[in-house]
Image (cartoon, rainbow, N blue to C red; front, side):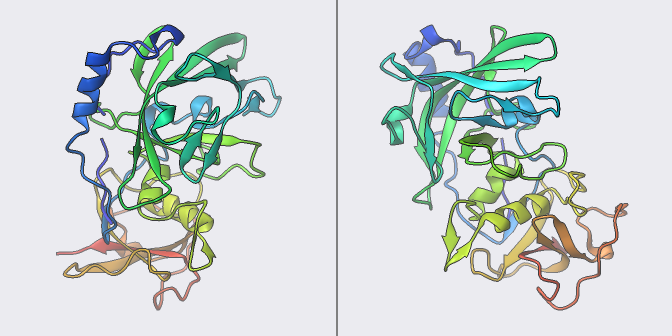
Length: 322
């Protein structure tokens, strides 16, 4: 399959007093997305190197909780992120929320009703404690899915406002919300899952792309859980052959994607050679001559692929050939 990612600049002030402000600017932001292509599954995808959006690729907002419990990301439990309040559109506030599939629900609100919700996070790093504010501006159902929503959000840190998610060109992208957190260094899902764990997954990163490929980690397909398929997909998208967080690709490189459960099928009129087959911990088999980028140095030993899916992989990637 092949997805492109991208975010436009946003100058809306994100603060508690800004909820519901500057209608004209919000309308302009909405117009930026009016012609955005509806998501659809197809068998040739464009992959990317990053697990999440570039400005979320660290623990400070790569993982959080939808309640007021601290989430520690260091062994000494000194550095943390903690949700203090969720301010609702009517000006009231709560300190907890939940996800139903890929849809946010807070204070009894869901669907479009969560627009203009603001999240206040306290962050402690060493001797420094500061605040991050995330403003959920717009909510959109994702075409082709009944349980996936995407959110246009702004971020404020130290009075500096910016889009929460941007692509490599600086253009605004939206975020999906996922009910887990991932280690940005290794790409591994944090286990056991902290209570009410939440990731703002920017659409230009592997976490969100793999949901849009159809591998929704909360769902099943013909009775098969898609959680491991989603994790395997995040390894595949980033060409993380060894499952250690090291990528071997660049954004925009086309690959062919195939699985045995019918989510991604072989593409008609597309020539490819099998690159690898993938499980949650990386490639379970690899054809070194078919890596999507030439002359790759792989720092682990991976068996060569034989017959399709004979190695026990969940998803197969292929290198597109002329």
